[in-house]
Amino acid sequence: MRRIEELDTFLITNEELKGTIEEIGWKDFIAEIKSGFEHSSLGYSIAPPKVYVNTEVSDMRCMPAYLPKYNPHYCGVKIVSVAPGNERFGVPTVLGEYLLRDAETQQLIAILQAEEMTAYRTGAAMGVATDALARKDCEVLGIIGAGKQAPYQAKAILTVRPSIDRIKVFDTTERHAIRFKAEYESEFGVDIAVAGLEDAMDADIVTTVTPATKPFISPELIKPGMHLNGVGADSKTKIEFYPEALKKCRIFVDALSQCKHSGEIYQGLERGIVKEEDLVPLGDVLLGKAKGRTSEDDITFFKSTGVAVEDLITAILVFEKLKQ
Image (tube, rainbow, N blue to C red; front, side, top):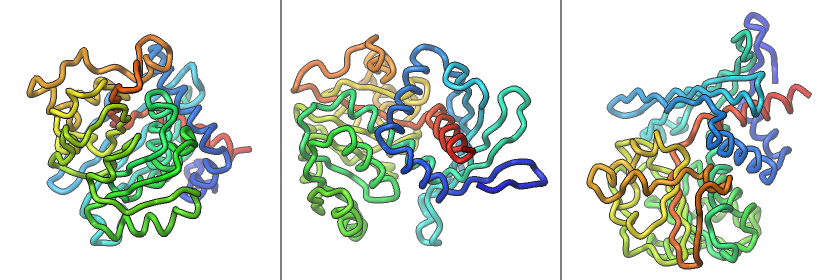
């Protein structure tokens, strides 16, 4: 962490953020992100729905937040952009920065590169949801999409479900799945298999992290007892699951105001397949205000759009740790 003297502001790189969170540890980091869901459910968060600016080939989102009962000293905003075509330029698909401010004076305290922040906090949110909703005896994890987000999803889910001993990974570009196996099989200490879509969906827990704009997961691929994390479709233009598949599921969301305008939830509501009263905030489950999984055969579906409190908590944790 170095100071930008003319701004009296610290700059925190992706590498510093990654090293700091790894030092904190996934278990403790997931617990902090969990508290963000709880604070939101209690009405303690100030976090308007993300604002989208869409171009024909990319989008930019702005995500402000303040958590006065979590830490009253900081507020901030993340500006994150997603450009699916960046791979051909050798540029990351997700780019962004976080502006951390003094909540009293609004002075800019730190600028954090946000690519690793987004990956870590999204993984941790899936850890929270999986721990709350998946069966306790899960052994097989299916990952659909082997891009940037995939290893963070795996690390978080393995943290909350150490019973998993096999990961099946599918990607439409098979070399991405092969690379994932080569890079992470030894590190994770579990068997990783490169799989087709149907085989990868034959799992206890499935997390989908793709940029798909057309649905490709049908109701027939979803079996009793599964827990599903729908991560990739975080806007109106993206979708991974056929909305009809949601009829088989108990549906949980990270933020109702955002999920109503994202992916399969948006299309399901538009077509009358899903009703708003079917959507249960995850924070309500964590606080015991709503039921999560009610039986071994329940199919639980968590819709993630990424909420601003996750980013603020991450920024505070990293800044405070580095400041020490």
